[in-house]
Image (cartoon, rainbow, N blue to C red):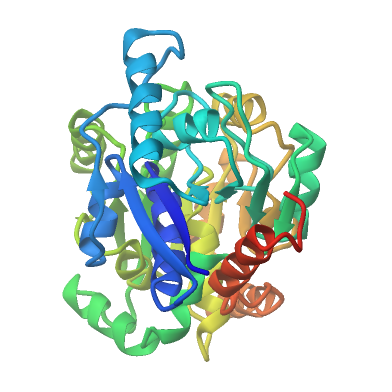
Length: 376
């Protein structure tokens, strides 16, 4: 029997996981895949060469609004047309609702969500999936603890693609592209769409100030988040120009290209530091030190309120260099790119679960669920 599965995505992080799952499913004779996306996820699938039915509908802020009801109607229309045996949806931030949340709300059948963040669920339209595919055992625990969700650990599908990367050659090419030689310490700041949060711009400014006084051949790299607005990016670029810090702005290609140019990757709490950990995992030699800029009270308060965790699971695991006091930032930037620190975080990354078979685990679970071997 061939099953028809409807896959949806809106968020970039969700898209990166689901791209690898869709690629794997497309090789199976058991499933036929229909793919429905919203921006910004749509462009990620298109860049990956995967055809998608792109919805020209925005995310909504109110479930009962006209736009919210229209989104639910569109989900019902697609279900009636495509007649899926199951749906697999991405995970979006809990502030609004999109096609993932609408599908989860209206579909009357086996429904699954691929988590890209530990213990998170978006129940914008008041519904949850039957099963959440989690990154690891800690994500399974947090899913139940926070939301009472049924989750299983499958690993990280998006990072399964790293096993095929020519990491050393790609790193050399990217560093040459930005004018960095072997003696250059490239420090990346990877943006987030948090400019409305008190403390985010203070965090960025503190980072720029700490970069100003670094000794030796230092170069800054700024990678905007896909959801940073043009005004957000412009503000950041102006902040660099107002200082004496030489900065390269990277907006092209996959995020991994920008990460591999760096000796340090800094962010408030972006998942890009988790990407760095997996680049270290698959590398034959130490590459990059991931750094968490978690010192501003506004950012810390926002994180605790919205994420509802005391700290990131990967911080608890020692995968990321934490900066909890702004006064320590200059010192951290002075040493975090050293061979000793890189080696420390390279070794820590080797303890991560192997993501190579994550897409297979997702497909196998869905298949067995539909065959009645698992209850969902």
